[in-house]
Length: 261
Image (tube, rainbow, N blue to C red; front, side, top):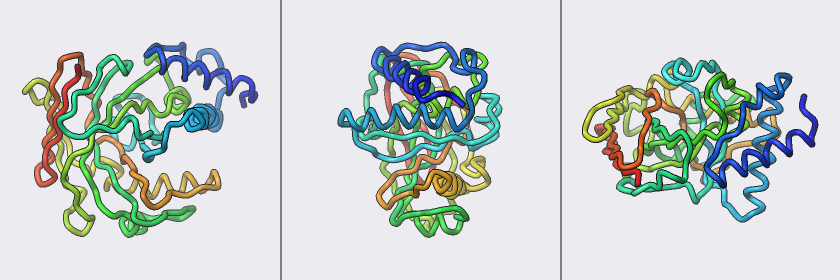
């Protein structure tokens, strides 16, 4: 376990890396004794400082929920982070490329909660009952820790590599569509790069919402009504560069477009 002083120092390193769009050396290379609990403590100190500075919570992101993402990162368990309202874009947005580091795109679904969801034994059925609607979303990944050799401890500390969310326009209740079979066809500059279906996320994309509620219970918290939960990618991350135009087709759930400038 890391000392409170070390946790605070690492949280400040990550905050500075976010401000400068820079990178820091791997935490696990410098502190091989660091645990998953330490990494959430680092993230928590960073989050609380952001809130104290005036940023507002928009929701939560879940990561590493699909085999595609676990194989792409070499990390074999889900993680989570926070989303602030100044990181939210709508389809058609021009996104400043220089605001992020190691910029990649993931294909996901997001869920708005109509009522609280609490563990320790939340199920998929409980999650579906708590969800108001699903909306397609792209996640912009933003990594401030060197990628080579990183572990889940590094990723969690770095707010689960979250950078931004791009939301689509189509909202559907869970009883209006079989969420397992929502497709994602992801293109960059007119060329298809990644495809997948939402069942790739733990068998059902809302399973991650139940997982997060149960994880939160371990920390004495719950998911609240009105929160947006970004449920995890069902494709591998796609690298993007300045000037790239991104389009994702979700069939019945419409399309999302954005451009990095």
